[in-house]
Image (tube, rainbow, N blue to C red):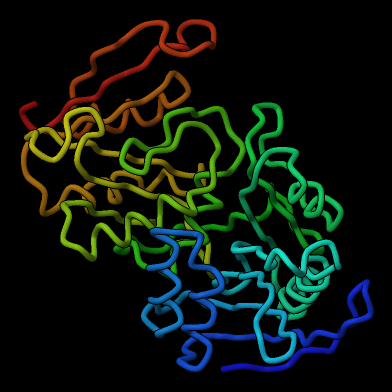
Length: 330
């Protein structure tokens, strides 16, 4: 489904059309994949899935520039209800430095805000040229003290303090509709370091590529599974994953277990972990840093044993320790 949003003049006087393309769209699918094919996997796979209408619950919206019947630039927003992820910012080489990206970015942000959007995330090179472009539109680094390239933009009165809403409502199998909410969850500020072994995630980090890779792996029959704890709207208050241990691989009996929750979701964390464990066999290993005392207590109640490795992280003791929680006869 395509709509012409506007006609804009570039700095050299040439005029382009700004298109809004939303899945499913067989007419523009191949053109967009051709334009953005250099992104590689798993992003090309996700584009093909989305533009073919196979990512239910996740809106795939492409803001493309067209010049003389040719697509010459793009910005994508993946959206679920009122939160989104901005990605695939690209202009063909011969049309760069003419204002294409700035025009498309302005159109995308206006459209997102006009539809009631509350917050957007993206990942780019820290303090790179794209970083400076996004910063000029109000994006701020989510963890700039660590030179991490995650950025976030809040709209209206939204902020990290009121983005997450309770109460926790239900545990569901992770699907495309949870893609954006999970990114905000894992990228939210907080002291916990070890947020996932399966993805993996260390520290506050948005999981754009990791989540897409997970969905692709699961579709291809790999032994990975995830459950999420849903809050109101598109809010994800917790995520638990089971998959091959990153150290031992798919041939090992012992699998990795992850659980990460916003404080509003911790009351139902036990239900979340049990759902993630259901259907898997063999020993499970969960890593918890010194800030995850709630997680250690939860897993002990579920029969996990604690093995402590001191001084793994830079924090002072005991926060710098790593607790390896082993369960189910491991």
